[in-house]
Amino acid sequence: MIDVKNLTKTYGSLRAVNNISFSVDEGEIVGFLGPNGAGKTSTIRILTCYHPATSGQATVGGYDVFTQSMQIRRMMGYLPEATPLYPEMRVREYLQFRGKLHGLDRSARLSAISRVTDRCWLGDFINRPIGQLSKGMKQRVGLADAMLCDPKVLVLDEPTIGLDPTQIRETRNLIKQLGEHHTILFSSHILSEVEQTCSKIILIAKGRVVAQGTPAELREKVSADSKIFVEVKGPAKEIQAVIDAIEGTRAVELDGAAEGEWNRFVITGTGQRDIREPVAKVIQDKGWGLRELRREVASLEDFFVKIIAEQEN
Image (cartoon, rainbow, N blue to C red; front, top):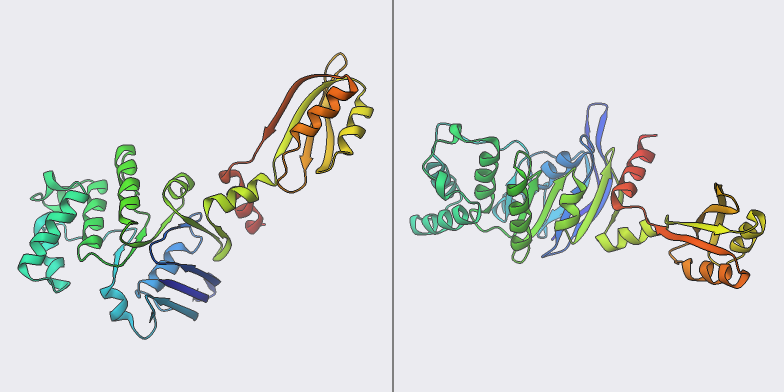
């Protein structure tokens, strides 16, 4: 549904988007994750035909963002980070106005407004002037606007910004529901939002795509950096040598004597193999005491922080 190849965007000497490529299949919910200033919004503005790219290619639904922008706009709903609204209008008036711009007749407008009002929890505010709404409520109005013409593709830039915790949870659930009928690309700098909602994650930093895949695929990369902590009673050097000889062990480091003859070790494995079972067996065979054996796997958050830090250096 969305196909991006070697996309670049520069503002003078600043390269905001640096030769990125990715794709979003029909029906996917894809999270565009990265720190502030990573290039997320610049990419989204290109895909929604608000800004031209400096170079590269991008299509949405088979239409080219450079030459077929009107076709793309007709099939896309867009919620920008700073929602542009008319504060003097009431919510109902604004949605009526937007429906007319989309070319909906009166019957279709009324039906669409009723649908999005219900889904975005705007019923109690439908006759309130937009200028009197909180930031979170204005965000809901913008989301309702994006959904008004039931588009094939929804592009949401920081859709939960300004919402309280309950509204954030409701918005996450709404995005999951919308994913049953729409292709969704939404940006965020909050990992938990993306991880709980998306079928695929694209991580961007300093204008580059630095990792992408399903949450499960990214967790597999994380598990390769897991460590095993073991506390054993016995001769430290012999214990270290025996564990180091186990297949799948990359390094065994003494983490200091615990007490008496007890020693703590940190074991780093190779690949994704969990070697706790062979470690426990060799310790038992040797007749050494064992009082701790645990595996610590880095979180996705640790992985993303590490990747982003590498890009900054």
